[in-house]
Length: 284
Image 1 (cartoon, one colour):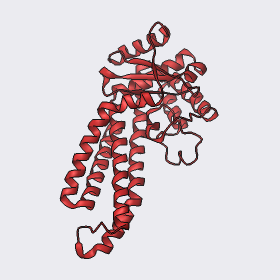
Image 2: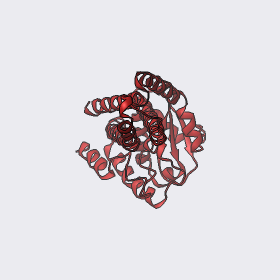
Image 3: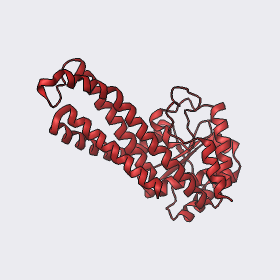
Image 4: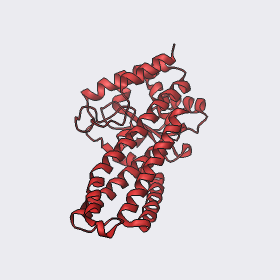
């Protein structure tokens, strides 16, 4: 309940922040245009983000004949969670990881890498898939897509503010105070992307904790997920996912950018140690 409330507040903060920057750039008209732009972008992310991310990582549908055991596990977990059976995909990558996508439970997809199936036993695979089914159940895919879209849009507006201030196109609300308005625009141009990124990451971390908890309840085995997370954390550092992008890092069960110092300064995932500790506490 606390995670859900926190996520709602953070999403509201992102939206208000976005609209506020629009007002700063273009007054009341800019505010309305920014709000309309946010709605259009969120609708676009709702309908197309799953297709984009599956294509980005070359995920291929996996039939039941090709992976009967995997389908059996997913079907059992879907039943436990009260969800429709999602599509199952394989990502041709040796880095062990997994993610879920899809605009709603009826169009959900769970994708695992070849590397994940290679290093985890069936109980651990079940724990990972339960975590991904939890994301579907909690509508985290939609929440994450909206947060990422809003954060990206804020960065676009901040960039506009920067160039507007540099070339004198930004005057602010007070026409006589153009200098201070331009200075304010430059400050926003540099601070807004950082603030948006921090809010987005806070949302992502909150949803990861909730997915761990929900997934453990779906699978009835917190220890299996804890064990899987420990293995995935070590393996992802040893075999980095070179194709991973910061815009989609929040989707994976463990951060695929682990090991890239600049990319991990702001992590979309909570510490593995904390996640494992919470799961083991659930098993007591």
